[in-house]
Image (tube, rainbow, N blue to C red; front, top):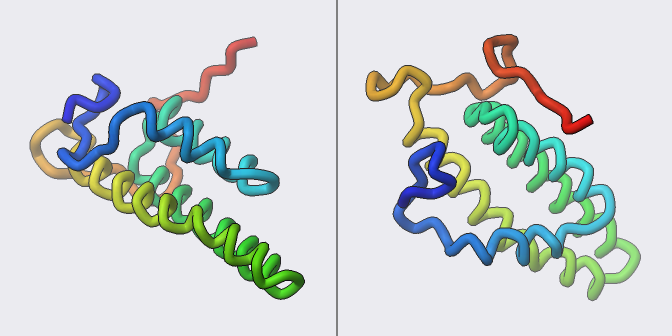
Length: 125
């Protein structure tokens, strides 16, 4: 799939309309973790660190579902539903990382941890 036009995406990537709808379902503290991931993935394009970051988003969502279920099982189950999307997102990000080696076609993948390099975060202000 052509994806964003700046990277190769897996052939099973959902239509672009799905992404904002699914991410709008992420609420509260998950939003902050998700925003950090979004910057790493889409602004800095650090695909390896993006894999690690999306795992943090998934772990945060799972923790929230568990914590809520201790107080109200139904609330925990409702917060558990987005875990389906998070598993798809994690698989998609991992596949995108593997499809986009840092040196073109040679197969060297971006590291799974943040490193100092050419990529610089740019702010709008």
